[in-house]
Image 1 (cartoon, rainbow, N blue to C red):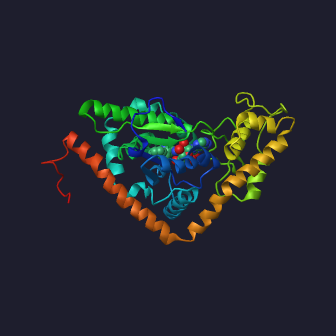
Image 2 (tube, protein in one colour):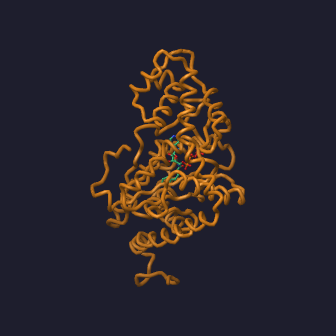
Image 3 (spheres, rainbow, N blue to C red):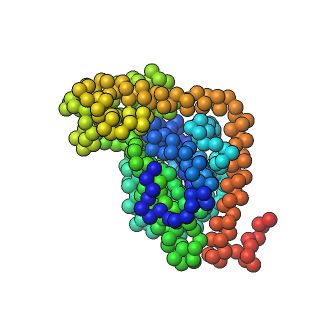
Length: 350
Ligand code: ATP
Ligand code: LTN
């Protein structure tokens, strides 16, 4: 992982890591290579890790309630199957910790409309959705800032597409601290050096997105091996006929090389040497095979976990209890600073 230039000082062991994904459908290979697979080793490097299932963010698109419940459990199983260890990390559902919504409101009063208007993800999504461009979609990054600032997170491992949202979280935290003294920890993004933006297999100028309408465009984490191979065989490349790493002119080939390297651990030189004198067919098949090998243990473990719904519920319940307790410190500090407490408390608090 690439430590941000502004990374704050301090030992890892006393720092907190937080990240999240939306329960909006099965995760893609992009989510895995750009984000989730990096979460696992961070558990060894940092004392505290929190991994959230952001169901409130998912509501920016209309969800079927039954399906949303199912997807939350599936995402919890994916977290565990990827190697997030509930003994060391707090795994929880965003809406089960009401402080996320409360902090979201408070932070929205420290966020300028113009800042949100500049968010490229909002602009893209607003264009794509066409209808139901709701205020939640617009203020989505404020809720994300709340997720992070609520736990004094130092490091936030995410894919490249979240960089702008992280910048906003930093700006909001710095702004609040400038007025009231140190209320929030200013978080640093942790963006992977490799595969931080896995591309769509049918349009390699776009990121691989779980909401892409074309099935062939995306590899889902739980796809059967035969399906994975088929999708790679149909991946869009170009007519150059040469395997080299040129993101500008050969984005499809560059994407396949990136995925191949992320799944095999090979350097750019090794991968290029491996495929020298070969045609695209071999690159596609071997990339597919490398992905199958990388995802196989995740799929197997996922299936075992989905047969244990009681265990999954227990992990999420314990996670919510831990997260609620942790959120109290920051919320108390901020409420006090804003003048929302009377005699140091809020009526109705225990
Ligand atoms: P959508 O694609 O539907 O907009 P998403 O997959 O981007 O949703 P999340 O599920 O919240 O949204 O993403 C979880 C993590 O995966 C985030 O850290 C995000 O940066 C990362 N990620 C998503 N897509 C990619 C990609 N194509 N390459 C690398 N990382 C990605
Ligand atoms: N916005 C992110 C998901 C997300 C997140 C977070 C990531 C919501 N809250 C807090 C890291 C930390 C996305 O769309 N990928």
